Image 1 (cartoon, rainbow, N blue to C red):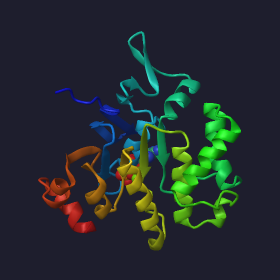
Image 2 (image 1 turned 90 degrees about the horizontal axis):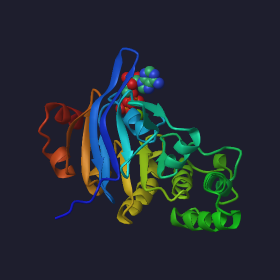
Image 3 (image 1 turned 90 degrees about the vertical axis):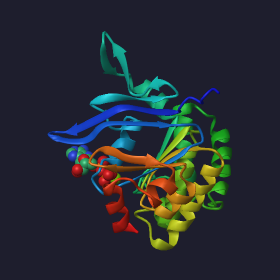
Length: 256
Ligand code: ADP
Ligand code: MG
């Protein structure tokens, strides 16, 4: 049997901030159409790990591969050197990211937010970018909001617009960093429901979340992080309902 190649491979990713080791040789492979949820206490390195995937942070050990290609750096005379900005921008088009704080451009309408990168980075003709943006807005149930400015939207609507903006680049993988943590409780569900639909469409996703019910239902695998390491990883029913590690049990008993 041939095994599908992973889309994302983290190979011994380490990161320090001064003396603080935030990531300690983290290994993770994510396969096509897989949803991996990362849970763990605050400060355990979840955001840093996600930011290493698209090279918003440069790991100081290890490499990230996307479809086999190293992200952000290349080998030159036995050393890893940063790739050119245009090369990194090209690599990043394949990795969509949605943050906790909806970071839409405040001075642009929803539609302008969505078409900006496809036009500027991919060179998509404006009319085509607009047509795609309208489809995406419908898909995240924001039809009719294209001329609205972000501040006029609820948190949940802004986050759905941010998801549409990321999808406009037709990414191969989507990273979500606690996408519902900053939302009013009544709008959390609408964002999770969009994410659930993305997962069922076969999009590859890495989701840092405290929404354990979402992880249980949507994740193919759950990784529990603590102290810069993946302490435990497996199917949700294993990690969430029958964890083998004491640290996982403690964490879950605190948040459930
Ligand atoms: P999590 O997302 O799991 O809460 P983070 O990845 O944000 O964890 O942070 C992990 C650790 O790294 C924390 O102790 C945090 O204070 C520290 N950290 C994160 N970013 C920086 C930075 N830019 N400079 C210094 N320390 C940082
Ligand atoms: Mg974080």
